[in-house]
Image 1: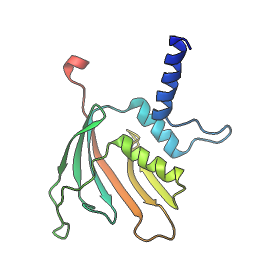
Image 2: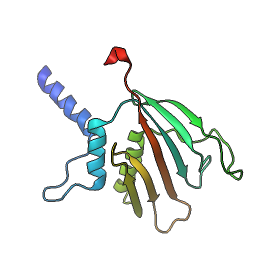
Image 3: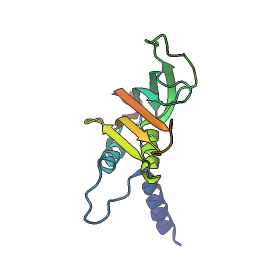
Length: 159
């Protein structure tokens, strides 16, 4: 195999991992596919957002401010707890927007009983999702909210 052909093959493999596969012929793309493609095409690689998940798991219901730098979580700070019934914990989730898309993709691939997702109209990230993995299992539901999204511009030296 020539170097150029190997480079093209590797590019296609890497691109396939990042972008959603094209819809089947004659089938319009789903909201998930549309938003994932738009996010992949235009998202900033550094950003901050506020996140909360709700499940029967440790540190649920806690709002966290997450800072992502070059697609990697650089900081995650627990916001002040408003409800005295919520136990503070450092066991909270620290997702990136890409990992939220991956979670939703896993739910679709696993034929989860219910997948309900809302997307941010400007940046196309999943802003709210309700996942129920199995109809007949109690306590497997998972909900998350992502809000207050703020792109972080690259340093002046990178522009």
